Image (cartoon, rainbow, N blue to C red; front, side, top):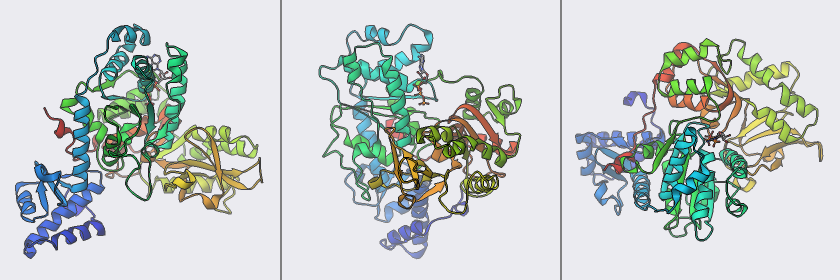
Length: 548
Ligand SMILES: Nc1ncnc2c1ncn2[C@@H]1O[C@H](COP(=O)(O)OP(=O)(O)OP(=O)(O)O)[C@@H](O)[C@H]1O
């Protein structure tokens, strides 16, 4: 990317100017210095943890008196840190350094377990398809830090429940276990599958009773104190848990992961579950992907490959996209042999509007919220972009108009029966968080007034007056980014008419793996192919810190 492609924010420029005013540089040097700092600030906001430097830039920065090399970084008060050929804003270097240090220390702590093989034989039958899961469990039983990665349905949750039972059997005192996920939605999904898998465990009821059934969000686990960026639990006030399991770990950014590691008590274990091939976190870093390739962690990472949930076209398409085989991916979509995966061959808006019939009908019939929510969540439009043709804004607007035309909704007010919304702001006081989905409908069991109903992470239902709901948007369509951690029976993936920088193979892979049964695509072949060929490259130093 050249400087011309970047649109620096006023904050990037103000930060660079603020620092350059504190140097003794001449105007030419100040200009060069500001350009580097502005780039570092901009790229950090784009998700990179650092930027690469050439020798001239490195010399200039060190001469500024505001940059320190990493050796001094730990105690350095300087705002800029240089490590090898990488420049960090101090805070991000600190997060990365601390995270690496903590994980390295944990990775050195192994546990030898007597008769482990006999126990594993009981939990994993001798079938070939269980071999991978058995190996993953063996790793987690013998390591303090482990990552189990794999695509959707490869049995990460299925395996981790067995690991929890196994570890409880091995413990002298019952282990204190916390289960967490980055979003409420992901927490809810994990909770459902834990409950399901636990019932089938080949162990005593006493052991089952020591496996927690509730899953919390990471923010709640750590004790968020908004608007402060700090958490109640940190190195000085660690969590009480002996073992923490984090699902959907690919969504966890560098800062949050670093704070989680800081908050673990000495001797605690950590298991990260996730799909390293999915989109990286919205905020900076690509922690799971970096750790999964880290040299010094090869005994701490296990990749599950076989999907137990779906095979066929969805899996083939996901694999082709992941391997950037654009022609094969398009062929799978256009073959139409398997109706699980197809290009949409009818009008987009007519099709999306028709998918809303069932839940709107259930609202009219005064069905219960759970049934209505289930019907709504069966199908979801996933867009790459927020604005422009075929974007979230465009489809939401056109679907609303179409449904109003069909007299299925009444658009005379902002809040109408059937309006689905996604919250776009955290409001801990109301227990509503960015990404939560609610449906506006009459409160038939009380006043009959319009209320917005939400399903909480623990499965309970909460209703709010529309005026109390924090900032939210209509959600007949959502961005692929926002769909992370969710699954739908059918996903309709919609790409724009022209190529843009958002379109990457990670974005498409994430969208494809949201679908349980059916995928439909609206895209021009050239745009689709360009997206498959584009890969996200995040600049970070995390994997380098584990070089042996
Ligand atoms: N070895 C196995 N034998 C039989 N069924 C299995 C096996 N492993 C997983 N399953 C089943 O496959 C399905 C998917 O497993 P699971 O939910 O654990 O996958 P996951 O990797 O956690 O998926 P996701 O990432 O989508 O949450 C579940 O219904 C589970 O019971």
